[in-house]
Amino acid sequence: MKDESVKFLVFDVESVPDKKLISLVKYPGEEIDGLEAVRRYQQELLGSSGGVSDFIPVTFQYPVAICVAKVRHDFTLLDIVSLDDPEFRPDEMTRLFWLGVEEVYDGASLVTYNGRGFDVPLLELMAYRYGYSAKRHFKDKYAGRSRYGNKHIDLQDWLSNYSAVRIHGGLNLLAKIIGKPGKMQTKGNEVYSMFLEGRIRDINNYCVHDVLDTYFVFLRTRVLTGEVTIVREQEIVKSTKNFLEDNQERIPALKTYLANWGDWDPWP
Image (cartoon, one colour):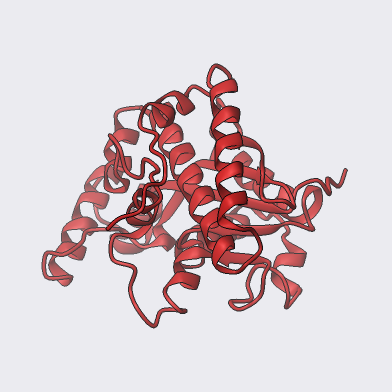
């Protein structure tokens, strides 16, 4: 059933290296286990980047958490959901994501931070893997694959003038400018080690925090576009904080976010 109360789907994906796929593609026929394949590939990437990064490309990853903030037409927060909680199965999370985008909330726009460079391609590849249809997304030229349309607002792409400059500091910097927590105990490069330790819930909590930061950054960008005033934005921020406080028992990840909450206090 279509839900027209939601105008924006602010989402984030956390993923880990696909050790089986890395073994099949990078080291076929070699007698090494999946963990060693990942380690070797990371070392190769570190070497080829001059010691800068061992981040494994999106094509060799799969999702372990997908969190979505449902946002109304007036930019107020309706709800936050973690797909396939508490199982967090990659195939079911992928199915639920595309079901929402294609059918339930097909009038909504996607909002991400670097979603065009990672999250959306990852979920497209997962739809390919599992055989899930995303007809509107792939065939409608005004859907989420259009870089300059309004069906997918990639905040990194938008704020960087479509890659004219680099947003050094990323989402963390943008969140902290407006008083929101940004990165706290967990950073993106720690997700794989957390996964190996079985800390799926902690990964999901981190995903929730990133979605909230993305939502508040998105809200401030709507001040830039003139869709809301700064006074109205602050009213929405206040009402959102009330929502988080009222729902922290239902969504425990909100407790940490609230404990690190800050109000907008511009400087210098």
